[in-house]
Length: 339
Ligand code: GCU
Image 1 (cartoon, rainbow, N blue to C red):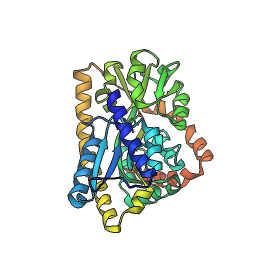
Image 2: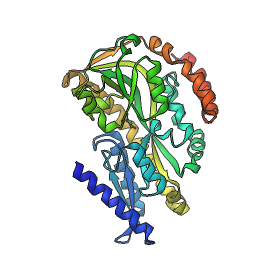
Image 3: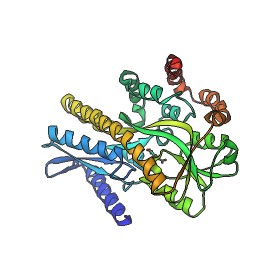
Image 4: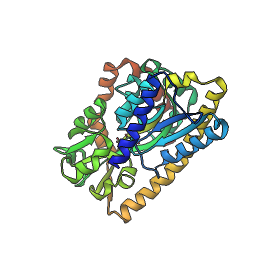
């Protein structure tokens, strides 16, 4: 896998050198589209990307070939976002926590207990008109989001049970490389340890950290359930992953081509959402029955109370999230009677 990584990096570096020397990124007459993501080849996002590839090649296959690089082989999230910014690669799937240091507006999703329910979260993400404005607002960063994928609800898991917020005290918990996530985990009373996704398994195994926080697929797809046996449904975040495109690449497309890429992106989301729900059900089964993970239901309100003051603090510090926050509150309020 280290060799794979080196080969993949060499391929991209080669492409960059070619483009720097004035030739275009063309092999056998086709423009190669490179997509990087952090997940395994059985993950819903990879299946979504396969549909994306198939759709693009079915409609524009004489001109474009889509190559998907899974498992962080082109680098962990932050590195892959930089490659997308500069145009060394064309697309990356990145979690909003990793995007927030590149484009302030995405910090909103790191806000704990932002959405009152999964229904609110989904309806906001599916409001294409509203989200389009958010996606377009980061052009100055050199990239634009083209669609979203469900990355579920994030919860704590560790080597020892977390039944109440007090159980987080003194625990070292891995967070993403996101200042807002660091603040959140510290506000819960734990000690935040930011690191890349690919390092988490070994860090738990070797006792460098006590646990982490993620959706259920981290237990199975990334095997964290082998080393952390307690998963607590405290539900601190509902978050999307974003399909991020290099802006110059999008602008280089004809209107007809852009339309095909947009349709491919929309299709990849449809596929991902269906696969997501299936995968989560399966992951819970596998984690509980084959890996011996205990799932703990808890008093979510007790966890919420610890971190709600962060809403005000984040809104004060980041003007870019204020409108979006207000909008989400109106959706929260409109659904209040539903539960
Ligand atoms: C999930 C999420 C990724 C994120 C990762 C992490 O897998 O889908 O976008 O990077 O968690 O915690 O680093």
